Length: 204
Image (cartoon, rainbow, N blue to C red; front, side):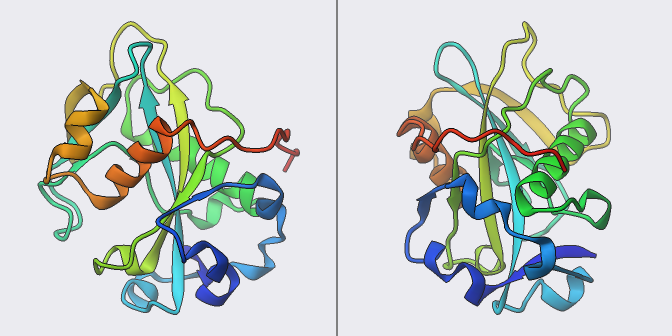
């Protein structure tokens, strides 16, 4: 089962494609979220599946990208800059921020053979779009993560993605083959990082 949130709970996030992330709002109890089989919510826009989404940036201001090769047929072949995935039951913590953070750590470790040594506590922004079947039922929570290792991210064998390496932001926003979420996440990162208020991640 995947976590989902009733659309009415996050209505204030849905008027904009990119919304600054205010961490205080993520310290809500898990009571407003529930876990249901994906088959029951994947096509129901009354619920939004929160997806933690990591964007890796290098010292040159480039962003790591990959191309999907399998998995969800609606996204197969598309370019992406986000490493992440659905929140699972085992990720559950006392509040959404800690839950999403746990899910992000798990997803990054599952998908890369050389995950970053440190993931910042706080996410950067929400992204959402309602023009595609995938976008209508998902809500992205973006983390910007500096990549400090000498080697770029390396997908694990068997993962359904192929590395494109680090690309300049303009290559991503101009390329029609990239997912809408990736373009929005790229805009959020290059905009600054839409700065979040300073807040430490509470212990789960």
